[in-house]
Amino acid sequence: MFALELKNISKTFGTFKANDGINLSVKSGEVHAILGENGAGKSTLMKIIFGLYQPDAGGEIYLKGKKVEIPTPRFAIKNGIGMVHQHFMLVRPFSILQNIILGVEPRTWFGSVNYKAARAQVMALSETYNFNIDPDRLVETISVGMQQRVEIIKTLYRNAELIILDEPTAVLTPQEVLDFYRIVENLKRLGKTIIIITHKLHEIKEIADRCTIIRKGLFIETVDVGTTSEEELASKMVGRKVDLKVSKSEAVPGDMVFNVEDLSVDNDKHLPAVKNLNLTLHRGEILGLAGIDGNGQSELVEALAGLRKFKSGSIKINDKEIGHLTPRKIYESKLAMIPEDRQRRGLVMDFKVKENFVLQRIEKSPFSHYGFIINRELEKFADSMMERFDIRPRNIELNARNLSGGNQQKIILAREIANNPDVLIAFQPTRGLDVGAIQYIHQEIIKLRDQGKAILLISYELDEVINLSDRVAVIVDGGISVNISHETLVTQNNIKEYIGLFMAGGSV
Ligand SMILES: Nc1ncnc2c1ncn2[C@@H]1O[C@H](COP(=O)(O)OP(=O)(O)OP(=O)(O)O)[C@@H](O)[C@H]1O
Ligand SMILES: [Mg+2]
Image (cartoon, protein in one colour):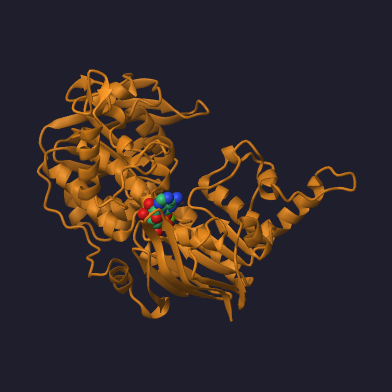
């Protein structure tokens, strides 16, 4: 029996068809993956199932065999559908418990919120599914992985039978991903049906039973995961054969261009996060910073970008001290930055796409002339960026908010690369991108390197660090614990385990 069936579902925004005649059959109790390139229409389809969007006329939706229309999320929830969005929707100053029961609080006889009953119910759920939550913690103090659990419990608290997870692992660290797999296993064991969107093919192999592939809004195929290889999945998704490996020539490092000396930075709690850290970058090389998250990476990057004050040390580009300059001045010193959190730091979500391309230099030539914005130049530039980085849809008038997650990320990359920096700091640059887009971005980063730029790549994905970097530094507890040369990188057996050991605190 199908928990959910969609027949010929379409969704048009203006003149753009985000979904075009999609069929989807989800069996009761299965984990069903949705695979498709950035902008293929996955989130749109999920929002239709959850009642956030109304499909165009002509399609049909069946829940447990019964034909329905899903006019609102309230209706979806009432009918056992839960959704965890690509970008979380929790109230940060509220406690975990308050967030979970928000809007469906149990009441006492006197009409006040019955926290005792709510707590008991939430704790029972937490135990059944092994969530390990502390209901009284404020959401703003918990990790992303924990926030995601809160979102999942929220759906369970509302008795969801079918749970939609939109790119749940894009925001998790590798360790959190393993915990997440256990959670999915538990949900499945206890009879829940799960629809999961992910760009990571190995994840689909790991946890999904079947996979539906969509391409540019069109339904392509539903396959059994067990009998379909990662390469097959990838080529069905993009419609041609794809090579999943990065190819690059050997680096030819030149002069030193970036130099960080003895840098110490505190975290938000005024505790040391970066401790006397040293690193140097040469023109024409990619230095990968490998490390488990929470070892000072965020604080380091914020200090380098001028977004966080540092206690001591120096940061130099081309021998010029840039520490303590404003972010704007640092940017003008030819340091470009791909930030970790694209929605908070990378884009202005309610600005148009064309404006987001020139955020830091809108008042500069050729985009402004005597204080007037030259729209024609702005549009010419934006159009060329859309073309070059294949950002979809090709509509520079849309607000950034209305682009798919992956295409938002591409705008940031395009903007930063186009500014012709001497140094690019790339923090998780391919988070949320599809395999084709990742390959493309990696090639762009390598191209930048070959033009003599220096790149500092900070990623929690060890595979990405190893594939892309010319040499690697391991960060542990706020300092560089070991430097791994290019030679070691290409000759060492089991390089992943080798670096993993250092990341876990091992020493030479
Ligand atoms: N409210 C909207 N108005 C206009 N266009 C929209 C709107 N919402 C989505 N789109 C467009 O529909 C297309 C599909 O977007 P969607 O978010 O469903 O993609 P996706 O498959 O989830 O991609 P990603 O993997 O990047 O998250 C995109 O091109 C997007 O720009
Ligand atoms: Mg999406």
